[in-house]
Image (tube, rainbow, N blue to C red; front, side, top):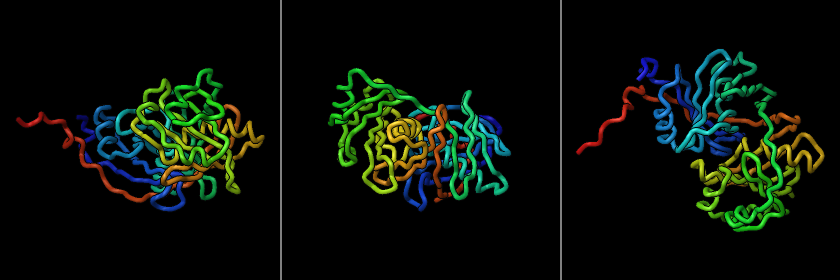
Length: 277
């Protein structure tokens, strides 16, 4: 173990895309002095057992960020990024923006009144030729299925997606890692509804997915002819995401609330031991 992991580190539980506690999508945020072994990061995320844990290394508004589900590392997560930025802004009230480096991408998060605005690359989706496997996994036939980073199944009515009881093993076995389902909204002030299933990533249904909205916002912006949209995710906890289509980029906006803060015990105490005999 690195000497940098010999001290307890700050750990937060944050509800993202929420304006009250115990709503939106919970994420853990862990502030590290240096990167430990990947196996330890996964062990922490597995122990916390949330949809995502964001790990940060850096200072003064510039951080490297990595995201883990309970079973694997993933390459782009919206709600945990919002949670991480919220923690950093709370810890340093003078900060006006935060830069998160992830591979070749830099995600900038800025204060916008009482909201946080995140700048992401847009995710494009194209019509899928044969959608029978997706329909079978959803146990419902959508009007259209698109494919990009994830599948996106478009339905005519929000009640259709609200009532879905999907075949999770079949969803996990699809060629792409997740399925977004969406429909136009009948709710005043809300432009579209969605749900997001990612069992292959260890998240059967995500409460409020930022990454799903990176595909949803460009689609609905084109379809509805407006760049700024409000989407409601119809999970058990639910939440609203404000999205702005900027062509090759998407701005996602929302609020977050810290519901728990503490310390993760020194990593040296987490060294894997041989099983007793």
